[in-house]
Image (cartoon, rainbow, N blue to C red):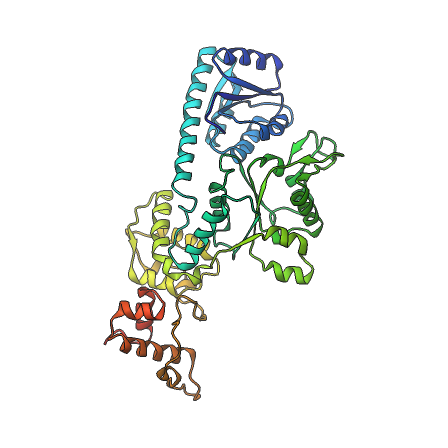
Length: 468
């Protein structure tokens, strides 16, 4: 979508109706593009900048509702006006619930048509201005956290975003790899072009191939029209290949060719199609190990990993929990029509002790559950699921473990009943030594140990050291 000019796409299988609408709109200063089917409209999209679209509800092949869903994905924010016969208004109302901007009954009154498109143009310009404001506010505005790991991620996004380099985003499930891809796209020179996302783990290899590269009419049973692939739809913009570690080796070779030669071959085509996309890939797998096992092509790995951005798991940045919780409470409270101000100290303490195997996505689910069940504006620990209240033991994370060198007292930790000091014994003695060295001043003690004050509070409580 582009707010410069007045650009509209008409999609209708009746040539006479398209001709009539074209005449009305061109007299009103619109630049009109036409397509006789939903499939043809999708083929045209990579080369278009649009401010509005007029779509017939009932067409052969891809109907108006299916095209609306595709447009919402490819050009989010584009105002789409549905054209419907008088007796089929209910379908148009349903389409509006799925994101259509408005609807008109056929044959549309000329003045009504102009008025609806004028409103669509105003909306289009507003969306465009909002997007520009968001980009100006910074590519990492939605990335919550001030831990060193997250600061490193934000710095890499700001440095690498404007480049054309292919980037590999690494991180466990739920850490926010898609958010990093969005930040890189917003920081790039391609920010006004599409960001097209593909989950490589969500489709079997044959369907994924046709989704990525497209296909020609007659390429296989059911291919009734040409369909552009995601490479073509992302033309001039960014293609985000999520969970690329799950991709079939045969398809990996085709992705490699697309990266090297800047061309793709739609299924059933005898001639390659040039592409202009920047690739951002993501995976929760260790691709180096997958290369060693023969599951991932080594040449593709090196093509993808010009720069790697690793997102730390939530257990490595527990100091970010308060800001994450505050952000999610506001977001989820609004979503669920519940007013929630904060969480209790014991609620937050329980969050800090849990390992978060599902990372931020799991935290969001836990908080949403608590918000739905809460009868108060302050969430208490009774609203947490059992695995969070009574977590399994875990190894100390980099942020939660003392980072000082062992002192003499640490080495002389009290032995257990078996006579062998445990990790907890050593950690307790290290805390005592650090407290004494800093005259029991907690901020200085936390700084000396390289941990947050909240983590120190938790450790002191855990080892019975809260009293001087």
